[in-house]
Image 1 (cartoon, rainbow, N blue to C red):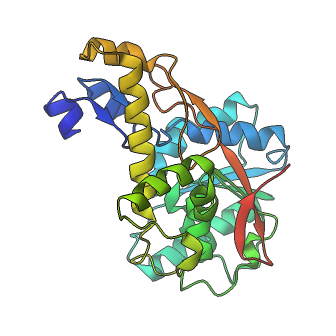
Image 2: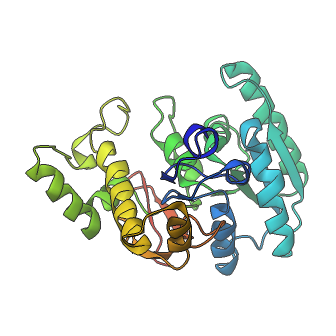
Amino acid sequence: LCPVDTHATAVVGGGMTPARLDAAKAPWITWMPDTDQPNQVLDAMSERGELDGSVAVVAHAQDAGLMNDTVLPKLTELGIEPVEVATIDAPTDDTAALQSNVTLIAERFNAAGADTVLVVGIAGANWPLYMEENPYRPKLLFTDVTAARAFATNESTTDTSILDDSLSGGSYGPDQARWEDAGQQACIETLAAAGVESPPPDEFDANDTSNQPYQAAFFACPDMALMLKWLEAAGENLNYGTLEAAIDGLTLAVPGDPGERTFGPPPAADGDPVAYLFTWNGSTSSFEVSEG
């Protein structure tokens, strides 16, 4: 909040939340999905009938706000009443406590007859990690594919079969698909001409999070593309009035995401990006964009 609130400086990019937007004192536009994307994920899952069973909902404590303020109200709107709701509140650095916490929650879910577990938020990777040896195997639905991928690529993961028939939602991906996107490739060519290399993600070990040089382009390219489009829409007379007005109706296919977005006042200040669904492919050990 330092630039957009304390210093009332316009911002391109960054993660929006309702609280941050309320505090913003200058125009703000971003390509990063804001907190309403889980609603779009749930809409897509509901349309496919993935929420038709007996659904239980779980989130780690750090995502409890997202679960209580966004996900549960959306489920109510969709006419879905969870059979159980739980929060994993054990400390993230206490393996024994996490194991115990998840096991007890699983017993509650199983007793309630939940055949589907909706895992909320990025920290949701803790659920499958501590359920690997548990015989209770409901269908898993992740509101954020990042959590599912974090589990699948975790060095501690010994069995990914718990992901069979699972479904995740989130932004376009995986990383290689973002890198191959035409808009992203055009930006990468510009970087290469300036002597900046952005090698494809497939050339690097997915488990080595310290060695991902392509990530710089993944942030710089959308930031620059959105900034240029915003400035062009605002016109030659640049001020915060023209910048604010230029957000409403601005359209752009952000590099790394082929879907065109239409920006507007919050909550559309992120362009309301399409929420993609991803299915687990056991043969390639990866989540792939669902065609269904």
